[in-house]
Image 1: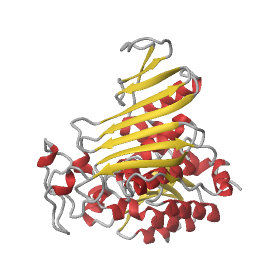
Image 2: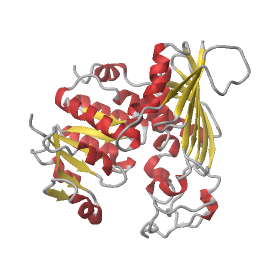
Image 3: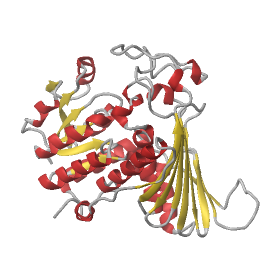
Image 4: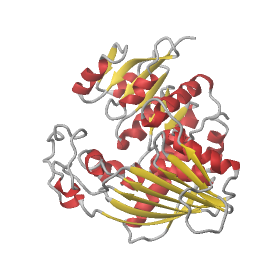
Length: 390
C-alpha cells in the first residue's frame, strides 16, 4: 500500500493532528507544509518528511503530487481555503468549525458536492473515550429514550487560549458559542439523536473586556500557554480586539423534541465538561472527561441522591492527544480518503453545530430573542448522509 501524500496548512496549536497523520511506510506521509509564519514553518519542518514549504496555500492547491490536505488554519479562513482545495480535487480534513456562519458552511458543502471531492470535518470529540462511553450507554437504552441534555463547560484557561489571540475577535470567530461550543453542540446532537431547531441565549463579556490589551501587531506574551495567572483579573497582554462573550447560557429545542442547555464560562479555576442526559428510565452524568474518570448511571428509583449510582463506568484509557481522539479521528479520515464510506463524524452534523452556535450568538446579542435554526437543503443533506456519493 502506497502512502497517501498529505499537505498541511496551518502549523499552530493543532499541528499535533499533522503529526498523527504522518505515518511514513504505514499509509500516509506529510510531504508539504504551509504557514504564513516563517518561524512556525521552520520550527515544524524537521518533524516531517516535507520537502516543500510555502507561506501561500495556493501553491499547495496547484500541486499535483498531493492526495489530501489538512486545513488547520484560523476559523475565518476555513471556508475559502477549503473551497480552494475541494475545487482542485484534493480531499480535505477541515478542523472544526466548518465555517463561522451558516451561509459559509453551506457554501463549503455545496463545493464538496459540486466537485465530488471528499470532505471531512474534525469533530474529534466523537472519538473521545468519555463521549463514546456516554453514546454507548444511551444507544443501549440504559436510561430509556433521551429527553433532555444539560452541559456545563468550565474553561479555566479561557483567558489565555481565547483572549490573547484572534479568538477574541468576533470578526474572526463570530463568538465562542460557535468557536468553542461547536464540539459540545455536536455531542449534544449525537447523544440526543437530533439537531437543534430553535435557540435562545444570554451572555456577556463580564471579565476580560476591561483587562490590559496589547497594541496591534504586538507579539503574544512570552510563555502565553505555559505560564498562567490567577485570579483571572490579573491577566495582561490580551489581544487588541476583545469583543466575544466570556459567559454564555444557551437553550435549545431539537427537531425530535429533546430540550437541551449549554453553559460556558472562561474564568473558572478548573477545566472540565460536565454532561447530564436524562431519559425516560434514568440519567447519566460524567465526572471528569479524562481516562480514569467516571460516568455514572442512575436507573432505579425514586430515591434521594445516591453518590454511588446504580452503575459506574470508567472512562477508558487512551493514547495520543485530546484523550486519544486525535489519533483515532485522523485514522478514520485517512481510511475515508482511501475508501470513502460512512464515518462517525459528519459534515452535516458539523454544519448543524455551527448553525446552532451561530443563531445562539445572534440571540444573545439581541437580548435573548429566540431564533429558528435555518434547515439544510434536504437534497444536499442526503448526499452527505449517503457517504458523499450521488
